[in-house]
Length: 335
Image (cartoon, rainbow, N blue to C red; front, side, top):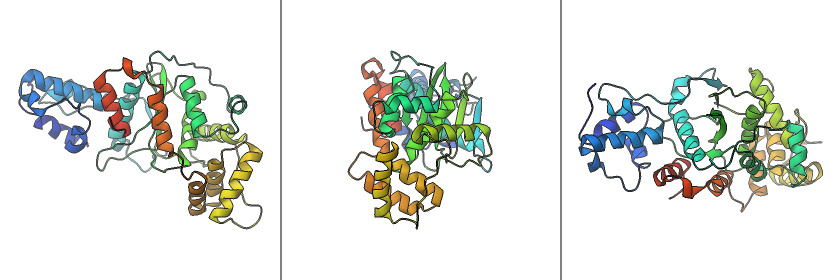
């Protein structure tokens, strides 16, 4: 087997063909790295090992001239809502998600996974003993308390196709990855949905569930998706079929914001979910999004909430410096 040597260009070329452009790759290399280090066979192999770890690629397929890069991600993947999509087009996003989760888990080794996630109604009752409703901060904190990392993956190569969310098992330890860029409202249901997959036993050992799209559509052509949707709605609202509608005419943005806050207090439902549920039910998404913007004005965005929770829960002192740097790059947090 021929081994490539001299300069980083062969590696960049290989990765480019796999959907990882050079600018994206360089942005995730350790700060101490200098491309000239790859001008020896040993340095080239070291570069391949670093890139393989960051991008979840089998190392020998990087340093061998004769091989195309092969992503080291589980083959046992279930793609949801991907009828019109080619699963292979999600390989890059899946690899980045898998890599980010593995890096995060290396900083959570002291926190075991507690596998007794209760039914949605029981979990709701438990959380409401300490909180007025179940919002994103409350739910993500619960996930970490039971040993499940929640990673917001912010960075993708140019042109890469991505999914809304993933849940997967890594050596007996589940992890959740979310990607939507909406500032407020959407990630709460996405997180509850992915937690539902885990709680309901949809993940086999080494399993990998890829939700190309997440919504609350009961007509989803998949039993697991319907079950995860029902779990999410029951957890957030107390009713697995909850649909929030106006009592009379459809509401304007300011009216919905005020009504959602009042409804939230009376029914112990996060007001952003009240507005989003209304938007889904009525299909008046501009009004729902506008109302959520008013409700959450001045607060950290949902992705900021997830990023803060991740690095607050990591034992950063126990992580390799390069792993921590790569994880910060993948989630879009400055080192």
